[in-house]
Image (cartoon, rainbow, N blue to C red; front, side):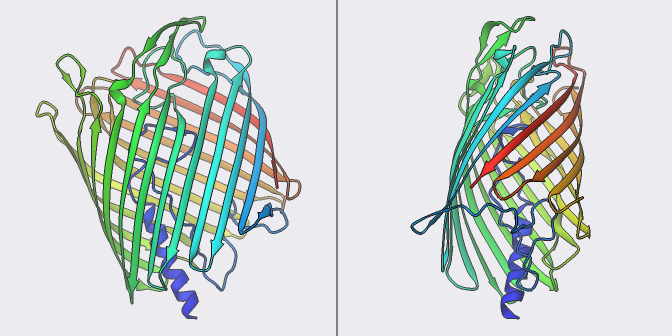
Length: 445
């Protein structure tokens, strides 16, 4: 019983970690900024033994077993696929669809010992288009994670990550016009400690991120390079510190208060002569509730206030209501609904050096039609409200997909997605839509 209660409490704290304001990790980002700290996997409690989430639950008959190498367990995989993109450059006029092939190798090495875990990861994504070679994308990631448990009350964690990522074309900070992929190098390091005693739990963490944007190609209508876009003005490094307190008010239910203080320092003081860059600080205060293990509804919701201050007096403070929530509802053993919501301050250095309030909503349903076949549908909406100019961005997304597990080693996947971006009060930023179809197979050991 003690072990079960401890697992449930750990799950509550892990759920709350998702409330730290950040973008999702992946091979693409809406707008690179202070990156997400890897959250702990939600512990479902010792009595349940399996994950309730349809998309993430363990499936012993189909999960890769890996390869043993001494104390390490290796999990290699490679994904290959073919797809079609109706608008690879994200342009409003003179659009040209294209086919592409994509290869994604991956290797995870894990060493679990009595008091913790050490995990190493490496992955890549290489997309090549049939005709539009300037749309080709190359991204990769190498990461390390470690966890040490000093006892039942304290846990220490740390991680590091180096990656080359591709910025999404619907990002409000993406360069205007017909442009090749925007690549950026991200270096991330973080450390976290958490402690619990009785009904009270505490978390302290610090993280650092460095973003180095590579120059991009400006393209003609035919897709040929006609110049380079210098993006050094977007290079930055950031620090963030977080303190969080949590109090358990019932079984698998807790309330929390959290404060986050971050600073961002841009490489160049000015974007252009007389136009200051957006170096400054962000402070976020959140309070909310977390639903833990052994509940049909799991997740957390926090609300509060955010302040974005800039070093240059010419740039006014941005402040307002802050929200960060992530909930999952396990309606039946074969159907999971999930929803996310956020409201925070972001910025677009290239677009008139302006900060904006970003509001995002998304939802997804995962359905286990057969033991081997998982279906999913999803939708999302983002609204970016610029504060120093009248620009407004709206982005709608819809998707549907399927995953079929042939056996432990082979998985077949396919998905189709639709994106529509509408930009108001900016004649140079394109409004566009995009349809993308992708089918692939993954081989794992």
